Amino acid sequence: MAGIGKGGTMVLRLARRPIIEDLRNHSSETVENLRELLASGVPAYPDPHRAGFYEVQNHSQVFYIHVSPVNGKVLLLATWRKDTEASRSANPGA
Image 1 (cartoon, rainbow, N blue to C red):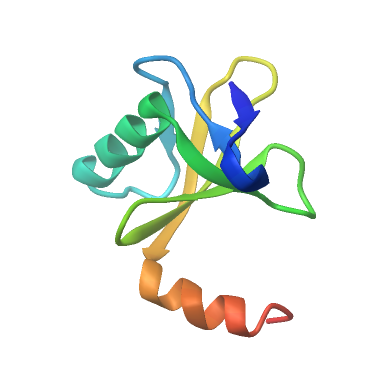
Image 2: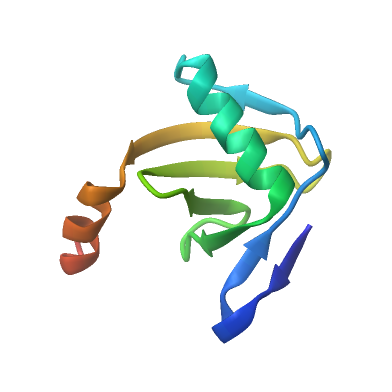
């Protein structure tokens, strides 16, 4: 499921068609983009405060997810445009 990639980055790779439960009614395109990322392997950034929670991203979007340790189901909790991630990283206490 997860491994360490180049430079110590965590890589998250799930089953070909991971089960994704969308808790916020995102578009089907958004859910499918996440599914493709997870199936192919994507850099993942663990939430330091919550086990099993990760941020994963593509070229334009960040996905905040939870991967169940029991059944591997992915809960899609939130998404945001990647450009707002830069401002969030500049102010990590926010």
